[in-house]
Figure 1: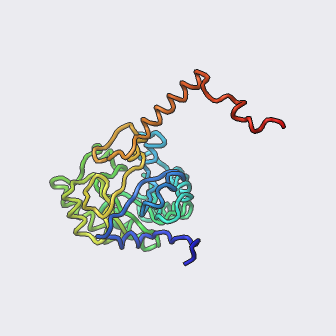
Figure 2: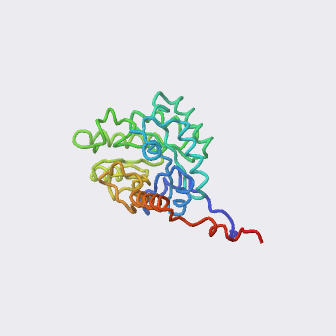
Figure 3: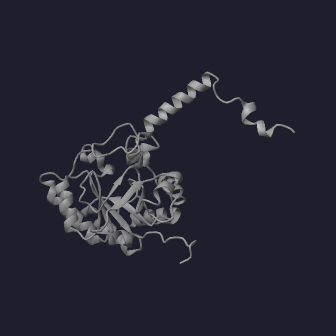
Length: 274
């Protein structure tokens, strides 16, 4: 191989084949610079509908539109060379039925270059997942806490406890049988996540689930401490850029008001007429 040859981008089948191996690494991204930083370290990057909350100030993911996802998907695609790009299908773009889901998934992939879509829901979405996969659209499934259903779930609570355990096991089996290449498990008990991971043939990607999952994903703004409106218990802050950024802006404002910024004649001294 030439030293300058581009490394092949990962594909959904590569993610599927990672089942039981080295844990898969993933983060959300919404911009080109963030995607560029992640590309060398992540197996797949998710253009998440969490963009509505962390970048657009929305109270939930429900207000995110197709146009918003496409705009951010295009930006992320510009920053990736090797990681697989997966893009969320926003609320209202697929629940009506398989045909609606296909139209919108095809548009997302065609306009952003994404390699796969992600949609929320278990057994009730199995028909739609099978319909998409049969027509060339790879699907990552998502069960447990599904933020687009937050109004029916009654809040951001742990899912799959008690009698709901068997239903979630059935959901995991249904989306696997329908052809999903991976499954996100959000905010479910560790023992349930471990059982699902052992019972299905596709990788599980945990977010507030279990270290026994086949991989993990976090919202990058949570992980970096950029989003400070609230912090989920399962999130580890690897940096505190929100508070650091606020302090830097405060320091900048104080210097400007004190006229402590560089004098322009010094900044442009090398441009003075000879």
